[in-house]
Length: 67
Image (cartoon, rainbow, N blue to C red; front, side):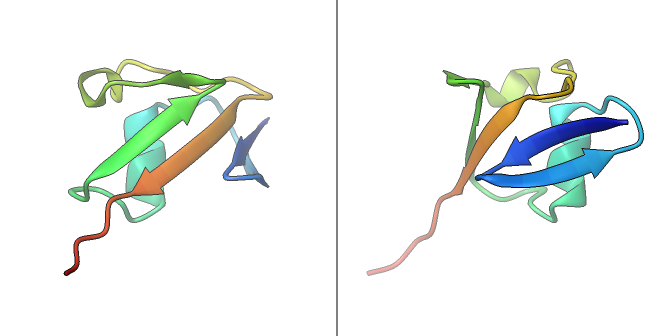
């Protein structure tokens, strides 16, 4: 079991997951997002390769268009 903080809210997962799986679980697949893990930006090209670990702190920002 791992616990990660997402935008200040704790979430638990039964095992380590990739950033790509997390994005899918959050319903953000296909949206324009920026993700920071422990203070460092994770490039979209690395989402599938980056495995989350217990205690990670994530900030997820969704780009919103408007006028």
